[in-house]
Amino acid sequence: MRAGSAIGLITIAVVALAALLPSDAVRTQESYPNRPVRVVVPYPAGGGTDTLARLVADQLSRRWGQPIIVENVGGAAGNIGAAEVARAKPDGYTLLLASPGPIATNGFLYKEMGPYVLVVRKSLQASTLADLVTRAKADPGKITSATPGIGSVGHLSTVQLEMLAEIKTMQIPYRGLSQAINDIIAEHVDMMFDTPTTSLALHRDGKVKIVAVGTTDRVRELPDIPTIAESGLPGYRAVTWYAMV
Image (cartoon, rainbow, N blue to C red; front, side, top):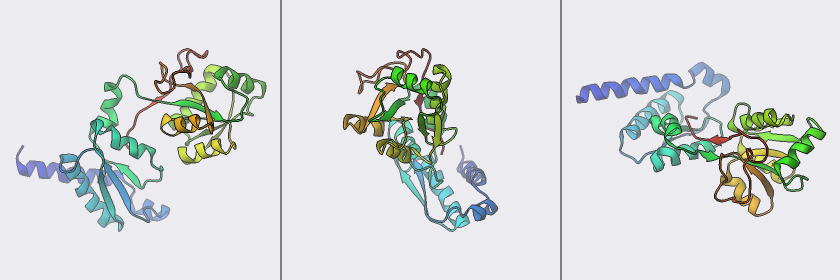
């Protein structure tokens, strides 16, 4: 490709990406952004995506009047950086700029995605999924379930559980996983779906209980914890992978 053509394509990409982000009218109405924005590039510095990210950051910084900080978090075909963005607070101040790898392709390339686990508060009288289902059926709508927002993987995992187990919980949407898991620890909420990244250590410390895992097979780090499918709900599967946020 000639240099002129490459520069032209980058210019088009910058304009297209900027057009996808909030307009001035929306930005003013919502006061966004009112502080620096972080853009994670899940590859080492110096590559094409890194170059594009810095061009986009320059244009957005001028448009928004706020610093746009580009940070390279490379490794694992882009999954490390993508995972870091996925764990960030979903407030629009941590963005991901990546090629299709960690956004779409990896969902087809990796046989098993990251597991989701079913977590309950430590004093809840339910040490197994069967115990939890029994309690939920005895008092429909009394078991409270935390989710990191409507439409999130945690929310959909809870809905899938309710449908297959024929139970109803009182779902409480949070702004993110960290707030939700804190309320599980404080025993303000009964249950939630979480990634082992945070809940595994809490389970081992006795601060929460993991009663089942959402993957097809048991998780290596939790060999004694059964899957939801083998606990009486065949066909259940709750895993996660990361995309543009």
